[in-house]
Image (cartoon, rainbow, N blue to C red):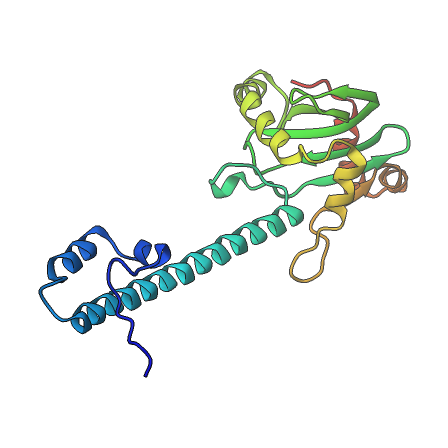
Amino acid sequence: MAKTTYLTLATLTADQRALLDDEQVKAIEAIEGKVTKQSVHSLINSMLKGAAKIKEQEAKEAEKQARKEAKIAENAAKYAERNLFFGVEDEKNKLDGMVICRSKKFGVEVVFPKGHDNNAAVVLRTIEGTSTRKDGQTTDYEMVFDTKNKRNAKNAALVRNNKKLVSGWILEAVERFPLMADLTAFLEKQVNNKGEKRFNTLDLDILNEAQQAGDKTSARLAKKYGEYFTIKSL
């Protein structure tokens, strides 16, 4: 007949002992030698099972939380792949409505007409060669500011008041695109839920041709976006 092995504090393995807290150990010490070995065994066995169950539940909760955090990080990464944004929670500060304009003579520009400053239009436009941004990144485009409405002293002052803040927002949004080709390629592949392109792309040369043919809308757009290529930044 096999000899029965009873659990006691002395027979516990290191792993088993680690499952018990100080209060439980004191409770076992208080009854050892005062009750039967079977009673001590039953108490320790019950404590170990309870502790193991709690540890298992904690492990499941930790795993569940890790999966939740991983999903949040995955969704954030997917959002970043699809959108330009900056670290401002206010809904009005979402970058939206960008317009890409190309010109054989002047190059390429991206105009930010809204979503950052009610008074300003911000233009990223290609430059000859490369330059270094304030964040140290080498790029082939510059950032210029214009008034959204008529350029006069009052409107210019309003734009200049927020220029430092707004330029920081825009730079944060486009910092992962050191070259204009990278930025425009990203914008041009963006579509909405209907599969329609999110951002308009204009060709200044085509607009000028339509303008010469008498198209008033093309004339207006050609004037507006043509000036953005050459304006002096505020």
